[in-house]
Image (cartoon, rainbow, N blue to C red; front, side, top):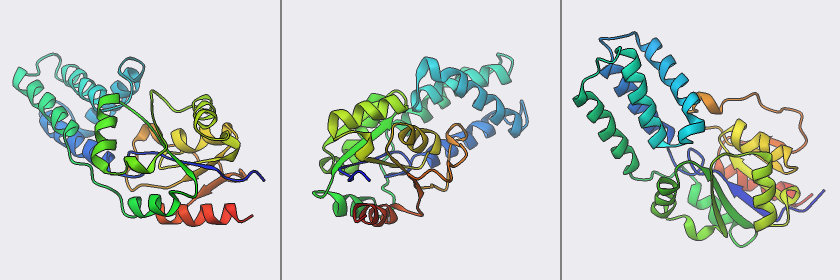
Length: 234
């Protein structure tokens, strides 16, 4: 078994809260369009718009805001008022300025691993927004490398762990998304550690690869450090 040398963490909803801000905005959006359609219909249309627009806008708040505007136009048959669109744009700006709220044990976990392993932060989304959150989190100094990518694939992980470490085979990726953080890392030959968050975007949901020898699921970030200690002692 290859010795672990490089540990990577996802950012949003792994080290700090993120999805709760999207859920709050979605509820506001449903209320805004409440006179035009049922909540279930609005949610369905918004999800469809987000999935369709990923290839155009990528992941993040800006694409989400544009998808809300598109959905509002569709649901209202083009009758959405300018002041309502302005409200959506303002909410998008508020999300982009929201303070970073660290998850429990985020700093303590990085402190425990720092110096023992090379630590990386691998996140996807809008470059400006992710850079802002990394700086505001106060966690940046723990990482030897910060990678903000357009998407997370097996090839992405293979390249990053080769560039910053000793290859994916001696690397571990921890995050709250089975689809983005875990499964592609397993395909790259590394360890994938699933750290569930109470809120998960529908797009990121996937079946757990139970039975894979390098897949692990833990309850929280503190458990990640304990797992790494166990894996390193083998």
